[in-house]
Length: 226
Image 1: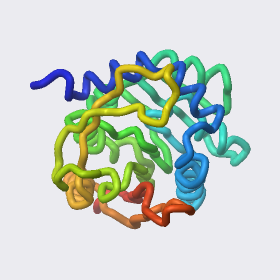
Image 2 (image 1 turned 90 degrees about the horizontal axis):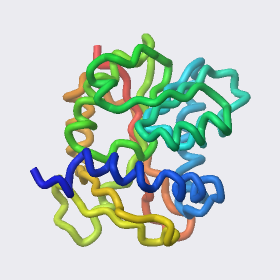
Image 3 (image 1 turned 180 degrees about the vertical axis):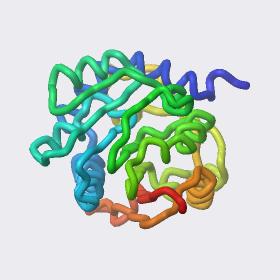
Image 4 (image 1 turned 30 degrees about the vertical axis):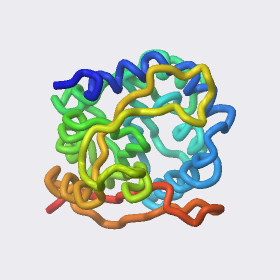
């Protein structure tokens, strides 16, 4: 396996870029988030009227802070210690250090009405193992929400097929370095992965950029297949 294109490299990159990421999020420096995707995932969570939420790959905790005051019990999980420290310092919910391997192996004992993966499913094997373990994290009638880059737009000039892609911090500040690779999945592959993980697709949303009119992301809403 090429280490430069692997799940391990993704984690390594995020360890290096935790500080500039926190700054970018808290200064609203990312246009697509500011204009559409942050609100889109918040609305998706609130539409389920949950009593509890787990944010997998919570980063510096923005989503939990944004939903503070709703009365939900909110738990954030991330593999990067610096991001969890930032999240805890800002408050709003419970924040725990943990990796996707912990979820896949059953070490995470929390459960919630909604589990959110907001632009946090970037790898290959780690994502496949994590999604297979999601049913154990959901309360009865619970829901999984995944927001990720829209495959049709994110594909760019590459062939429209699954595969590793080089990362880029284009458009970000010079403080960022060593961009993480990511694993591209077609829309069909996402749907197949959800089904193979014992989950059933309930809804599919496509938030659209208010200026370009192009889809920015896709939001999958799924529950446990019965």
